[in-house]
Length: 331
Image (cartoon, rainbow, N blue to C red; front, side, top):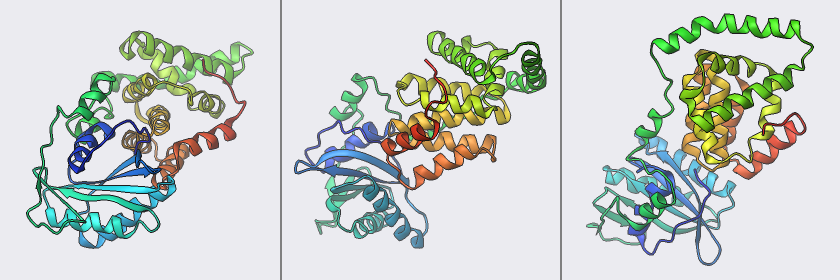
C-alpha cells in the first residue's frame, strides 16, 4: 500500500500506466486498488494483492481489498486487475466492486497487458493498451528519485538475507560478543539502555554516512545483541517516525547482514519505516523476514497484523508514539 497522492490520470490507460510508479514495481497477476477523495477524485492510498488461483478465494479477497479502502476513509475507489487470465481478472474486479458498499466505484477495469476492459463497457473485444516504461507517470517518479522496478520479485530479492562464508563466521562470534557486553556491564556502572542506544546510533550513522559495508562485523554483531534488550528497543521505536527514506534502506541492509535471530529487530524496524511511508509491499517483506528470523518476536507479528487489518500509517505512528513515549532518543 502507499498513501502518497502524486499523479494525475486522464483515462483508464493512464491509470494502468501509473501503477508501477504508485507501487514501486510493475504488478503482474495482481489486484490493485486506489482510494480517491473529494470531488476531483484525488488519488491516494494504493494497495496490491495477489490474484487468487481458486474461485472460492476471489470473493474473500474482494472483501479484503474493500475493507482496506474503508479503513483508509476512501470516498471512491479505482479497481485495476492485471492478469493474463482475463476471466479471472474480470471476476476479481467485480468482486471488489461488489464489496465496496458506500465507497463509489470510480473505475473498475482489468487488463491482460495488451487490452483492457471496464465494468461499465460491454465490449468483449476490449480497448488496446500500451503499457510503457516511458509513460509520464513513470518518468516523473524516476526524476523525483524513485526507483521503479520491473516486478515484485526484484524487490523481494533486496530483502533476502546475505548468505555466504561471512554470515557463517558472524554466527560463530555471537557468544563472544555477548560475553563482551556482559563484562562491560560488570566493569562499568553504565545505564544499559543509554549505552546500547548510543551504540546503535553510532552504527546507523556510520552506515548512512559511509554505506553499510563500512560497518565492521563486530559492530554489526554488537548492534544485534544490544537490540535483544527490551530497554534498548523501547528507546529506539520513538525515534523512527521522523526518519527519511535513506534510513529504511540502512536498516534493511543491516538486517540482511545480521545473523540468525539477530536479524529480527532490524528487519522489523525496516518494515516499520516502510509502513510509515505507506509502502505496504516492503513493510510486509520486512515483517515476514523478521518472523522467519525469530518466530517469537512479538513486535513483528503485531505490526504485521496492523498491516493486514489496514491500519493507517498515521494511526500506527500515534500508537507507537503513545506506547514508547519518553523511552529514549536516537539522533
